[in-house]
Image (cartoon, rainbow, N blue to C red):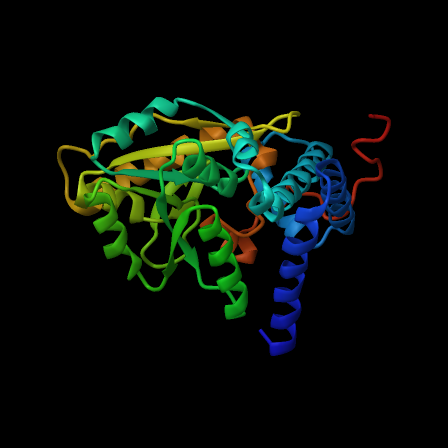
Length: 319
């Protein structure tokens, strides 16, 4: 990335954090929806990729249905950003009431056991809000990992933002974070990892909505090495200001098999849990990049998504 482009990108995020968090919530919500609709109408590469991904999640969807989903998906994605820009200004009470989860006993029981807990999430809903709820409502700090960003100043900004929410953030540098995560878990700590996309050579191949994708091996390996509890989590929005979620039952380490075989079985179980949440709320899955291995080869990319905006606005006539 050029220095100028990097400065512009960093400046745009800085403006978002400084300006949006000062807006009244209804104004921020409206602004996010307006930006989402403009981006959707432009039908850039990321919107088209979102539709292509949704075509795998909802294989019988018509082009009109995919257009509806991608519009709702962009609105959900911008809701994530508006909330994230505003989270540092939310009161503790606002954070506590901003998220409700089913199956939370899986998490609280795990924390109480001092066994160590790994929460693994897909790019659903607002994982930052869920994390802030854990540190505020449950008063439990946790450790997570963030990819290095270009420019470095933008990465530093994201780290400072997440640390302000009570998270310990480790850089993702070729696996060097693994040892620190393992130590935190052995000490009975909590680790949270977004784990639905890994295009590295170390990724584990899984069947995901009928085709092959790669997901990170880290959650399964950490559970095997430390004895920590591995819990999938899925998140979604409804029509209220409150985000919803589910903590799924733990994924156990298989009793037999090699480390690689156990890792494969556990990562597939994670993928299956993620798929249930994504299938129920596809519009809240913010996957605007290529995920499936077939899509990495343009000749094999799915062709179901429409290549131009539909003639009819899918929301026309609705309030």
